Length: 199
Image (cartoon, rainbow, N blue to C red):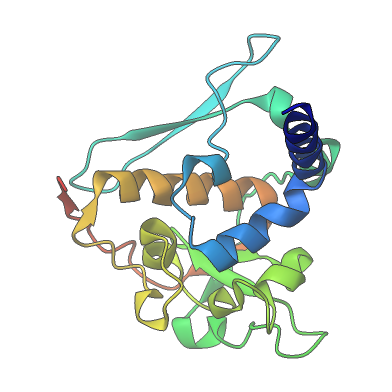
């Protein structure tokens, strides 16, 4: 019995040490994208009592508040945060597709919530052969909201999504806004209206 407890403790210790490397593999192989263990939503406060929140609302749905726990940010995240004021550069969907990282000197862009982000620093994830390579040069709103890596879901159409999918979409809007620089906007007249279902 003691040896089982000892081995379990060692396994959990190693998992904790290598979590950043292991969790993307578990997500890709196991399909656990909606599992709360793999989504860092942050908490409502930190040891200093400081919290920053944003509210995201898709037309026709209730607002969703996302709260960031600044104590959980690593030094790397702090160095990688951006002001995120997009320049007056507009991309059509066709122009966006050219930024797919197909060559080592081609940047990788993706669009979310009408903004275009440069995700080139995540080339191992978003580049050719990466776990999220499908997102390179594409509009990703629906795919991220419903957690599906399918070509047919690469659109800004958020019609008939569920409340928890609105929350997932809001999480990704915050995630990309904090982690990657905005390089422009989609040349569109805003997002498609969303219809939220109660399922």
